[in-house]
Length: 494
Image 1: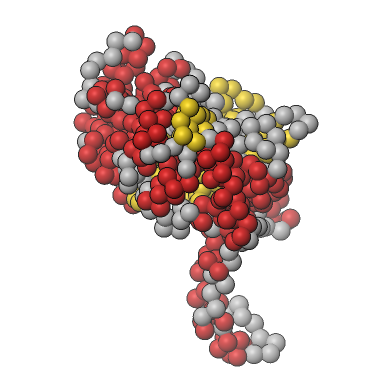
Image 2: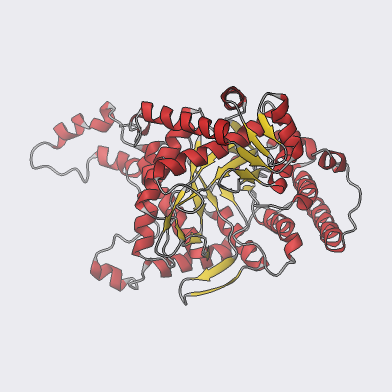
């Protein structure tokens, strides 16, 4: 059975339409706060009801639906090495890294602030691991001043991977420099835009608000035509309704509002739809990444994304466990497998431990192995004559042995998933080979990759220009003496 036929769902077609209509009613009746006058004016010109004093826009259904119909949903993101280009909307499963404040050592159960050296290690690992599609700085470098950490993350990370590098940034002051750095790597601003090689993750301040900084960056990226990912993350019981359906429709409304704004700026902008609600453990007031409810939320959000024609990205394959234990494995498998069966194209921010408790190199290696197994599930099972094996069964016959038959030799590598780190040895052989648990094997693989893997280097002239530009950026931001840039007029206009 092919995966496309499974269509795992929790909501009926009528229920999905009900979720959709409720989201539209939220935007039209309650509205959304947009702390950005230019954005309010764009919506005002098209017939939205604007309260300029409260900075609240009530957006009619027709404006939202036109945006959803017309934004670009399928596109290619060019990586530094073309073999790592990302085909958004192709149905191929994507797995991205996350960025955290801390780095965790699971062997001695310690945690410390992330440093530049951790970004280097994380990017080398992400570059080497075959199932990590998008590399990201695994931490924000706490050994850099806060004002330049986002720029430093890109400057450092792009040297250690030829895959697509995704950097999380929030400060408008960083944007011209990030665009300039990314343009150097891409071969110019035109090539950066054509290749869609830098994107922005726009998070609403849920419930129902986009901040001025976020909207400033949205305008900047939309005017350039660079991709924007709208990612809402209501926390049920705190920033979202306690009910699962309520949090899904709230997140959906916020994502639709962001997509609508982007569309009004650029009618063919490439966008990502990401609706990732989470629940709250009401005993502690803490967010949960690995709950069974998270699996339900993921499947529902995927169905809504598909309803609008978007490939779906959800926070699946994550965990609440603070170490690499059985809880971690169960929670990751529960949400990731169900999300993939529902048709998710992109899952989770891999390499993180707990609900944003920190990043972990060993976890990233294990996440790569998990993803490999999930890809085998996604592949499904064919029922061709060769796969049905009627002739092989007749040849072997009653009381026969398939071990030496040609059919077995032909299909063994094609059909079976072979783990690299997960154990399948019997007890005696496992003890003989060292009796290593999964964490020890993950640590060994981390060390082996860092010792042996050499990422594709930047051209020396490109790296020199990148370094000089980054050093200028650091100096100008920290001394508040910014030099004029050809992108200044664009930034001033938003």
